[in-house]
Length: 236
Image 1 (spheres, one colour):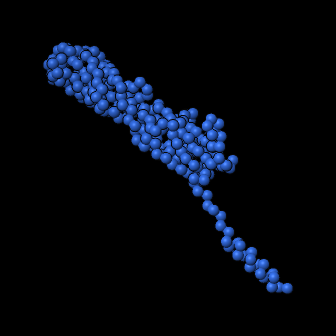
Image 2 (tube, one colour):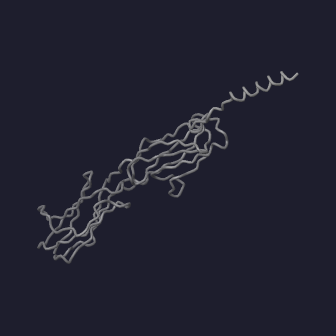
Image 3 (cartoon, one colour):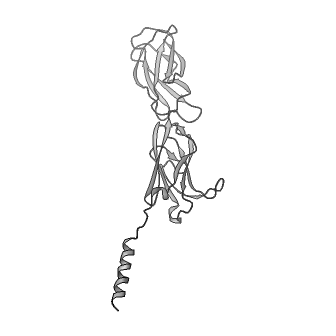
């Protein structure tokens, strides 16, 4: 009567050893990350819609996606680089898709950003490119319209780079010259910040120095993408 019991016990042991649970892959939790636009200008304003697709049969506790970016921000977050989004059915094209969507806003610094989507310890990343937002126009603003001779006298010059949309990318270089109508350079710059700040501005301090000159002075600003502008002041 003891032999059948021993056989039954061995069978249970064999079945237990052969049991193997299939591991969960990241692709089983997060299918893909896509972008509405292939790239954005780094102008601090351009936007693209970012979509994270989940498996349609994802469990209810695996439908909140944390999306983060190494550069730029997300809309409706007060300038934050991380947002939590609950995935919902795609009602417009395919109801058998679960989508979590957010709006990515470009920074003012060109380069590649790493976008990360994560759920319950699983994460997937994609690279996204922000390209240089070149200036489209230049505005020269002198602190005064007349400069007196002598190295003790100087004026401040502000060069503002502008675009129809947004602000040019940071650190756009500007070359500034001051000359008479014949093209002869006059005076010198005591100090300069010849690359643009977050407001698209560059700053220069100019003096005639020891140059003896009276008459028009033509200020010319030129950017690295060959945009230029002039402004005329007077020396006396």
